[in-house]
Length: 289
Image (cartoon, rainbow, N blue to C red):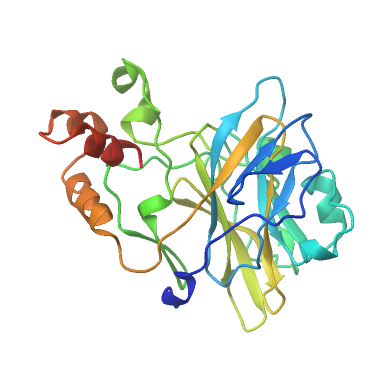
């Protein structure tokens, strides 16, 4: 997969979105200003094969049941006179759309190799929480703070640098919170990062993959028509209030990134960074970005 072809594309949200959404001036932050629905957003341009549309949850809103939903659609947002109120089921019922509901647990997809219908969704997030087994539920915790520099999904190679969000721990988090020890965040938490992409499987078909905090959840939809333009779908739904697009660097890493990776390579726990003789800003960058 040619990463250089993806390096110069600045990702934005499409100006045609749900009625309760407001975009910032850069077009990279989407906020649902009222209610819990009418928060469907699209990428401004169709994604290229292997290009991840990565967002970070910036703000949550208490009192609602349900979370972020992400996916892909073959509908050009400009062609929609009215953006559907919900991505699930409204947008999906229009056809040529594949959307996955993100939950705190059970986001991994159970593979069914013997069944492969065109565009068939293999996981329905919160709607199938009760039927997914232990192997398909939850995110596998990384063993160390430092991970490989790239995430590989078939022929696709994605720099890991921006894929995982970082928690802001409390005073005793390193003692009490296993998620903090493993440098992981629940998928629906604030600062969690979630991405969607499609991976070519043949000349005209592709699989949709969801990536949560640097971990591939598997093929959540198969047989997508990759010969057609595919736009990212982000439904800022219910408890999710504000999301921001994270720009992924596909080209050469910056000197800042290389320095951080060199430090992280020798660290197995984030609290150890506090003991290093480094400027406070650099410690913060190594721990949370």
